[in-house]
Length: 254
Image (tube, helix red, strand yellow):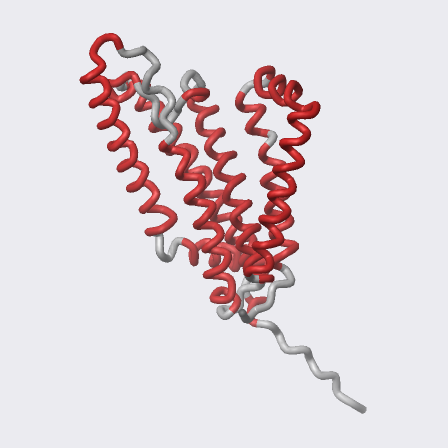
């Protein structure tokens, strides 16, 4: 009689799934400098530079300057682009390293997306609080608006914070998708992505010029900002889902 041979137990099966995912989150904050510390330093530096420019313009323009002259600063927008790049780098740099420490592809992807979702809340709430401080100080003494510019100027804290959370999720899930494409197919994956993106942009412009301009304008003008931003959430979920479909077959070795 032949004895049954027990299948070897994989190391990752000995650790609960939730802990494995949390370990990936901890991996991303092992070096907090690029994703947690540096963005705030650069953001405050850009704010200080912007305020200096406001002060110079206000000094030489005198009392005739328009009341809303400093409400259209776009310096805060760099943050979401920067974090999209961080998401691309995180997916590429940490994937095979994590697999070497018995993480699965699913663990790594869920942990990475969870990390950026938590950071979305941190940055969204942080920018919302800075927008409140901005209003309490009369636009930093210049009637300016850096953290809640233009269309955010009159919105309450909850809407400002949600706006940044949704925007952050949109760009970081896009970054995770791009990073997953590079991990699986290297440069060819990026060629595929940017080629498809270019076609999508051309199709969108064609649709806008042909029949969609009025519909688009009506959508943005007829709906509150919170509703408009809520429509980005399904897109973020789609980016995250496609990113997982790409990464689940990525080779463990480059």
